[in-house]
Length: 168
Image (tube, rainbow, N blue to C red; front, side):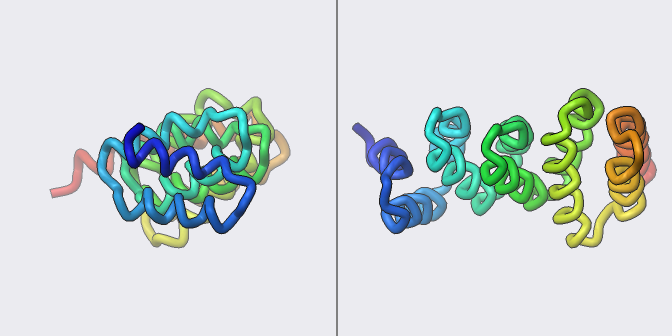
């Protein structure tokens, strides 16, 4: 068993201090092997393992984790979904693009919409793409987010894409 695997196994401990120590060790190790291993833990049947994996990926902030963290925003455990949403926001533009893309397809999920709103609120603190983020947040806060959020997310994706093309 590798050192990374034995540390990953500690994420399942009933002792919160052991889990925290393991998470911090994984974050300190960083690297693609750790990121991919943590991504695999996002689907573990134990909620504490999923939470710790999402938290570690949030702290590592590797853009490779954007889509897996967006998928974790669908987690039936709200704490896991919330930590994943915060992790996506820490990824910057790759995270924003992943959340917006998720909204174009998954606005039927009330839980995902709530997690996406939380992520966008966290992303907004970075000070980038305020106009696009504000429009999507307004749609999520509206009367029919299932209908308006996908359109707003698609439009935001288009505006971001156009902004990238026109930048010198």
